[in-house]
Each structure stands twice: as C-alpha cells, then as structure tokens.
Image (tube, rainbow, N blue to C red; front, top):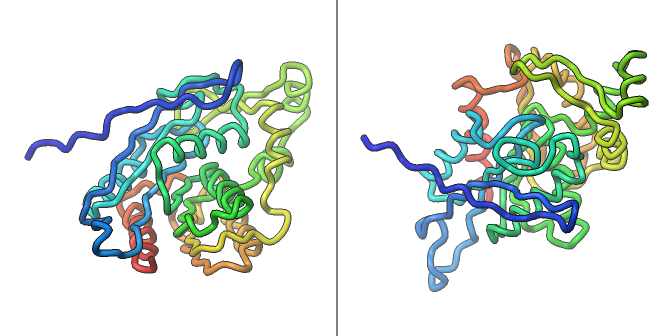
Length: 276
C-alpha cells in the first residue's frame, strides 16, 4: 500500500519588524464529506488543532496520530512548530507563552479555521487555555468545540519551576538571563530564560475560575515526572464552570505516547465530535 503523503509545509510570517518570525505548519483540509454543501446545512465539523509542548515539534507521535485520525474522519487538522522549535524560524531563547500563543493564533487565522478542538500537550495545554481566554474575550467562544489537555502544564513556570530553583539557578537568571537543566528526552538541555519566567507570571490561568464554554477532557499520567498529577487536579478545581472529564492513567508518563495512550486521546477527541 502506498504511503499517504503528509500535507506540505506552509509558512506564515508572524510579528512585525525585529519581532517577525516565520512559522512552519502543515494543514490538512477537511473533505466534503465532513462539511457538506450549503444546500444540506449541518453544523460544521470542527478542525483539530495540535498544540505541542516545550521543545517538541509537529512531527511527534501524538501529532501524527491525530492527523491520521482527522484524515480518516474527513476533518481538517493543523499542526505547527512554535518559533525556535522544529523547522520554524526565530530563536528559542526569545520564546515566551505570549509569543507562542500569538503564533498559534496567527497560524489558525492563516488557515481560515472556524470551529476547532484544541489538543494541547504539556505546555500546549497552557497555550490552549490562553487561546480559550482570548476567544472568549473577543466574543468568539462559540468557535471552541472542545479542549483535550494531555499532561497539561498551565502556569508551569511559576508553579513547577520557580519553587524548585536553587541558588545557582537564581544566580544564572540574574547574571546570564537564563539557566539550563538536563533533559530526559534528548541530549540538549532545557533552557529557561528570565523572559520566559516573567512572561509566565503575566499569563497565569490558575488564579481564578477558568471558563472555556466547551467540554474539556484532561488526560494525566500518575507516573509523570515532569507534571505531577496533583497539578492536573489543581487545574480541575479552576474549571468549575465547564463539563470536565479527567482520565488518570496509573502507569502513564509525561509523554503519553504509547499505543494505549494514543487510543485514549483519540477516544476523547471522538467523544467531542459526537457532541457537535
């Protein structure tokens, strides 16, 4: 059987002047079966938008599995690389939650997506929640058909990193503007900048009630070494106004990329499709 070709890489310029950076994305359009002709009006099927994690890219297992699922269902699917990630332009050290959220908004606008299900992994869960806030602020909450949050890490800079900083890391932030930390997922260390930490405080969402106006499904591994499941439980407390389901996976790690984890993720997305 011939291998199905991935959507071509497209690029969009986000920001102006010195802040301009080229963001790479792959967009799979919906088929006519998913969105019938106007003479047979039915609710538009939402697109699936993948929001990756810190230092991840759009070619990861979960992103590809979601695209395959969307293709089989005739749905549109968007995956992209934040600046400083994958094949997008821009420097990683310039990245912040505000900057990466702006890029997500820009790529979604470039593809003309209307209704959507946001699937956010780790930091992508934080980006998803901020996008939900911005849609609501602009009177566009109806565009959000659902949120699937995988090992979500909202407010991770202030809640998970800053409390663990030692004297050496704090000195490095003051003197160099960043500190490094070994990564369990590759040879290159994680880099956390002062700019990221400061911007993170301005983007906190776990400060009051979060209203998304759509169904939310949280999937969290109980053996996650990076985002403890207590953090997901804390998020649940702030999602008091929404229809929220949480799946705790006893032996699940942070990535949740095993076949059984992928099956759970796709089931969560599929359940939301039945509600629209």
